Length: 189
Length: 435
Image (cartoon, rainbow over all chains, first blue to last red; front, side, top):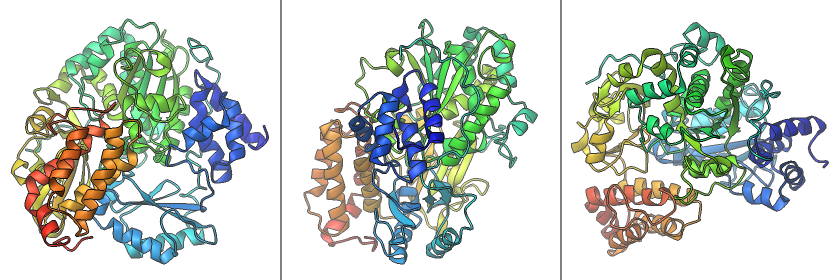
């Protein structure tokens, strides 16, 4: 085991221990690895496999089912434009088209400078902000073309550093309490 | 009618810091749990039965009855479903971000009532800020003595795990959620035998309750089930958090007394939806998430009532209402909803996996002007293969209800707007100019 950093290995082992069965930590560990590298690398999946007691293929097979887990590198900012019904009714496709033309890339692609990846997202549960966008899973909206340009400018200048963490980081807070509690112990590990 | 019933699950949201432990304790937080721990678990369950609390996730199953299914189990898990992904639904998102302690307190009360010693809150991965606040709140609850061994010096102990999803609509289905929580793909399980109450998490009896459902529990324990049941009408008791979106002036969340308020009130009242954006007319609306058949303007005076909406041929579902106005192309709306189901189908069952793709392609060609006269029959035929009879409530040929949800928008759209579908075909494209 080598790919995860020392610090992340400690966090990973702790995560695996709070579940009655360590395989339950598979998805949280994928998020952890993605927070470290910005995406889910093969090497990280090998580490996760060992921590969860499954094969690397099973980690990949599971991870590839989920939209948030990227097994290929993505931009520093993953910009997910929701185009589902509530956002579509308020101009989401116009925002998406503007995003593509202004950044010069299509959906699923990354800008040459590695800063932006665009996604055509399903409903993000931000319909009161329609049309809404998530950047690294932080919400922005309602947005029109000018609003989108402003968001991109703020991301480039670093003005949103406090709000938008690195891609892959979900919580900036770790579970710190209750770790000493013995999991019920009713299920064999 | 808009009643003056006081809000329950959103009662703290007037405060900017409603997510903090400090604010939570200053506003009666964890008092419901303290009271619950002085009662027997059966007494807590009885209060919830008296409240007739219907599950707030979408299926609307009585929460108390769900609990009673595993009262005698020796091991029981509680899983709280916060994987809110039904398009146009954003109420759990609100509760996770703005009142995480209320969810945790409700979770502890539910665990006490069913005798669970390990509970999980499954939070949709895309709710990153909400997930962070839940973790923070969980840490604080342990420190406060509300979680861990011997909660508030009682005999009851509970361990809680805040678990992130990773982006898959299907994980809102309770057996898919359990698979995901076990570290696997979100494939729904076949029921029977895999009813969670019998064979849930790790094969053990499990209760799965929605976030909004458990958020009501602290209030119910404090004020009594009868006080909750006094709100609303018939089987739709209490208040409910409705999510309004689409072509309205004031999209947002509104906690309203069940049954009393109508769709017309919700959409048009200046204190609620504030009318149609742009001043046009309501062409159609979705009464409870995109799995629900559409309603026309003639249904606007129905109450926000689970039974009434069910009898009228749709469902109140996840409590999310989407307004379409006279600028909306219904073919495009049906196409976008179908595209969603095609992308989110887990792929296990042929009718859903293949049917959703066929339907999306047919709708797309109608919208783009390449439709054929026989396409409307073809759409209904594919729908019939996914859900025989295309009736309501739907029949099912698939493991879970995602499949039979697909025909809802198509069948109701064609029924109400056959002429508009045909105009796309005969006119060689969208008469409204959308594409």
